[in-house]
Length: 371
Image (cartoon, rainbow, N blue to C red; front, side, top):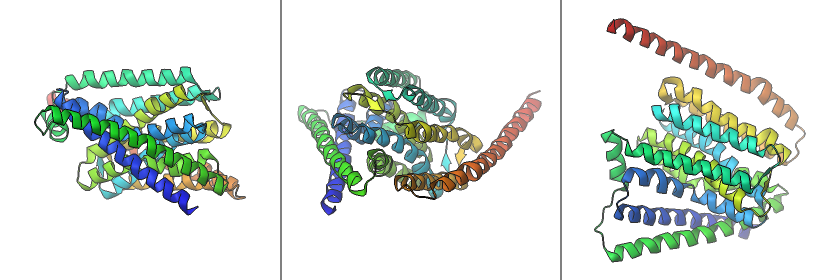
């Protein structure tokens, strides 16, 4: 048991380090080739932070453990919103950019619903995987088109400070960056193999399904780059980055990670009745919940962050009770569905109604002044 845990920790460390090295090399190489910093941030870095999820999911699927891959993606998306945004909002209320509310969050909701609909036949196969990844390509194309039309100097300066080339171009530097990319990819492959093998052994040792291990331990492990980036951004006061990082990562997980995994899995990804009736609906509900919470003042307040965290704890508790076949599972589920969820919906509904009334009043005031 001890060796299994050590192997998982070692695999995770190699995985995260490999992702960091690969992103650094790819970003510098792109900057040296003249790629604008804004596009580097929106594409290479965004892919890089999701590369641990991609490596682990692909490794799981190719090793004949597709449930681990599925649990990894669903668990990561739930964790990103509930745990990362919840914890970040408790540190400091998070600012939500208008573009996220108008565009990115609705796309994230649409992608979540699309995955759920595609999974209804009981399998995510090669066709569904290709469709999801095609949506990713379209989204990336839109981001690049939109970034070329960006006129906000503050946004451009922020990306330039983070991703612009800071070193002289030379053949030696180019070779070094290529070596970093190759080394990072090799570490991703090796680290993911260690981590997946350890997770599978752990699941068997505790008598838990690979799906539950994927939804919990593997999801937390592969989300470490997002956790670190968002919490660090919150501590530094970069409150918009924390939110954008989560929404972007969720989209990449659904369209790219799950799409590629379903495409390359030899027999596709089988979807159990539990995933269809509990985990996927919960993931969709979490995505939908972002809209009213983000809309209220375009800020995620501390009490809203506490709601997110509370639901993550409640969901994890449900998974563990279900895995243990606990006799109180049905009472716990009924309590959540009949009391906690309706109370939360009512609270958010009242807050959203107040926000909409306030906006309507402000618009009327502006209209009166202009008249």
